[in-house]
Structure formats: structure tokens, C-alpha cells
Image (tube, rainbow, N blue to C red):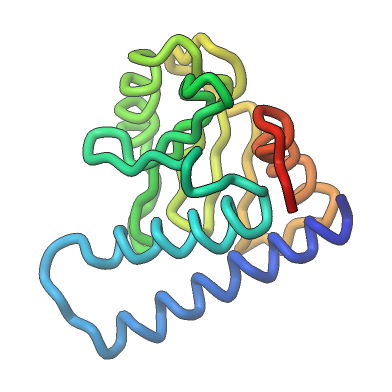
Length: 161
């Protein structure tokens, strides 16, 4: 997992650097930034590095991204915000309120790319996250591995690589 943790750390950094570069030149109104970040994180982190296939990845509006197991049961909910958005208690509350609609969820993740918060278990009443990863604090490989390990597709699906 140390090698995977290193790849995860560097890939998220590359996505954040790309976001900052694009933001300088693309001044589109609306939420293009959040959608771009979400797409890059899902494709390059969750799919390429954590093993989630496109058939197990559901894109939505109210629920940004749901990852489903072999029985098409939602097991992970990913909610994203732009990197310049400071994640507040209100963001956490709304994310957990949405998560409560799916009793099959095993993990809920809220991120702005820099700060990652993960709630474990199926009861997502408002409480402190079970896992927090702040990339601005130069986390150890062990911390990166511990945060992302529960989110690997092989825990929920047969993964062919």
C-alpha cells in the first residue's frame, strides 16, 4: 500500500496543480471548477488508482458520485467542492444528510482536493469524520494509505487489472 499511497498523494497533487493552472486561464461562470476537479479525481484517483470501473461509478446532481458494488448497491458517496471552498460544518451536515438517504453506504467522502474527510459506517448522523487527510500538512505515506485503503474497489467488487 505504500507504493499506492505514494501514487495517490502525487496524483491528487497533480490534479490540484492542473486545477490551479486552468483556473488562471478559464474564467467560466458557474461551477465548472468543481465539476472539472470531480471528474479528474474520479478518473485519475478513484478509477485509475483505487480500481473503480466506469460501470461502478454513478454521476449525479444531488449526489455528486456514487460507487456501487457488484449488486449495484451504493457503497461510497463522494461529494466534492472547489479547492478554494473552505469545508464548513454546513457542508458536512448537508453531505451527511444526503448520505443518510442510502442506508447501504459504507463510506462518505467530502473533499475540496486539499482536505479530505471520510465517515465510516452506515449511520451518518452528524459527527466528526472517522478519517481526515489534509494535503497542505504534508501527510505521511501511512496517513495517505490509511485514508484511502477503505475506499479501494477490491473491497467491494471483483477487480480485473
